[in-house]
Length: 330
Image (cartoon, rainbow, N blue to C red; front, side, top):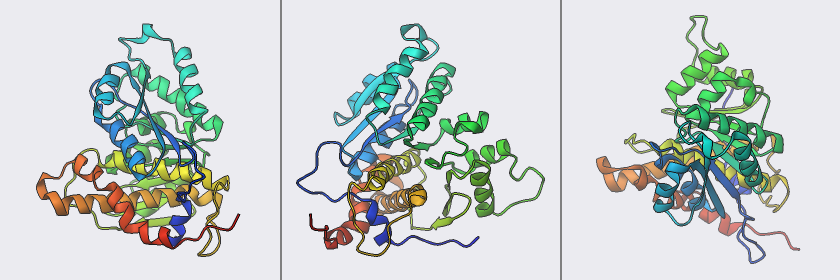
């Protein structure tokens, strides 16, 4: 299967033009499901990356013991302390959590799950049910980190749902492949072929196999992102990729609704390929932000350094293109 790199001009069609006619939320309402007592930074990076790229509203749905900490990171995030650990499960039943999360999902364009989720079975059960609810609503979904373990346990959670994007790193991809029976016959598969087979086994979801080069495939098409990144591998960069994908998927949902119509460079993106284009854009921007952060900070680069560069990376790639776009006359 041959690979291609989508043109920046094509990706730019997903980005909402900023006009005086916009209302709050028009450029994306998103949520990150995750965050427990031990892991508070991960959902913060997801939601903050989405905001810095231009999403209007970003929620974090987390365990109540993580909520105060995450609120202290940023006043820009709406923190919903709906999840309950086994120790706190008597505070609220799973059905009550479903009701609260369901009301939130009804207002969103896209949702991410897994970052900072942790191993608590009660939290995982709530997020599993939230993923199923998001799927029933047709929401775009990004699954990373601990949410990928839920897919390994129950591939049917996302199987056949082409509006889902999975973003495994190498160890996560190995576990996912084993759960799906890919490469278990002893034959060593090329990474791109293994990714393609995983996507096919899951019925056409978009798989982003992160690595030296990011491989993005839905089983039929293949993109490879080899944008230069920084040399530091600090934790949290994958969360920013998830947040970037979240923003572009939310824009993709608005794009599919024809909330705007920018076609100065040819035919529009096929609806079925919006997740792949959103995932590629996220990989490209995260890698470029990592490169910029390393150029400035070197070995002292942290994930907060990368986050501070994500909007600059966006401007470097898209600013001139967006300035050149002409909106159709009303």
